[in-house]
Image (cartoon, rainbow, N blue to C red; front, side, top):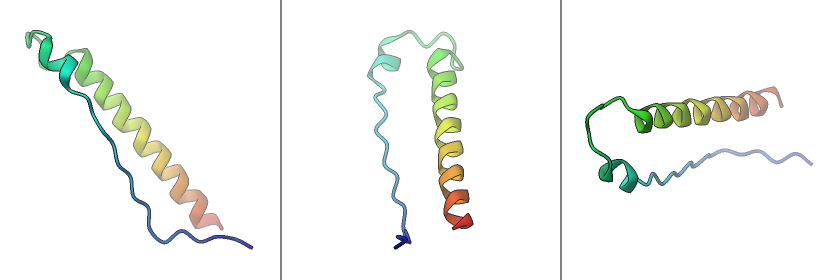
Length: 56
């Protein structure tokens, strides 16, 4: 028997302590790039799940 998911809740915790302790010489430094890559990966995964749910 298939299970239908009608609501999807995504929660994330971002630890910004490391970024605050580093000097802010480059606003688009490694932490910004890592954050962007993380967000892109999350979006891809969510879209993949939604597509799979739509196919069912």
